[in-house]
Length: 150
Image 1 (cartoon, rainbow, N blue to C red):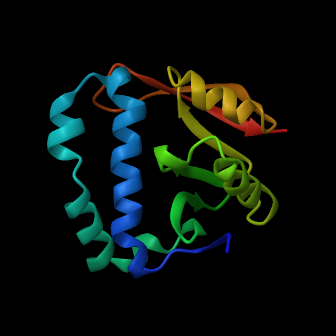
Image 2 (image 1 turned 180 degrees about the horizontal axis):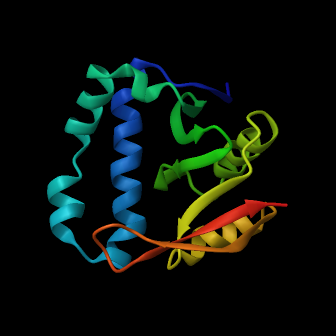
C-alpha cells in the first residue's frame, strides 16, 4: 500500500542507504571527490546516527510501497532533501513527495546544486523557478541556487 508517512527509527538503515547511494550517483560527477563519496559517506555511520539521535528523523517523511522507496526532509517551508532510490526513479515517487511537501507541509523553496541539471528540470516541472540567489557550497567550488515555488 502506497503512502507517505513520518519516518521512524525502524526506517533508519533504509533512509541512510537511499541517501548515501543516491548522493553518490548524483554528486560524484559534480564534486569529483572519491574520498568523500566512498570514504566519508557510509551507510552504517549515518544509520547509527539516526538510531542514536532519533530526533534527526523528526522532519523526514518517507514514501512507502511495501518498503521505503524515497524520502523527503522538510524544515519549515524548505525542502532540504528529496531522494528516491535509483531503482525506483521515474515512477512518480519524487513527484508525490514534492507535492506532499508543497500542499500538505507548505514548502515554498529549496536549494539545488547549480550543476544538477536533472534536478533543476524536475523542480521546474513542478512549478519551481530558479531565483537570483546563489551560494557557494562551503569547502568546494560548487554553487547552489535557490528555487522557489510559484
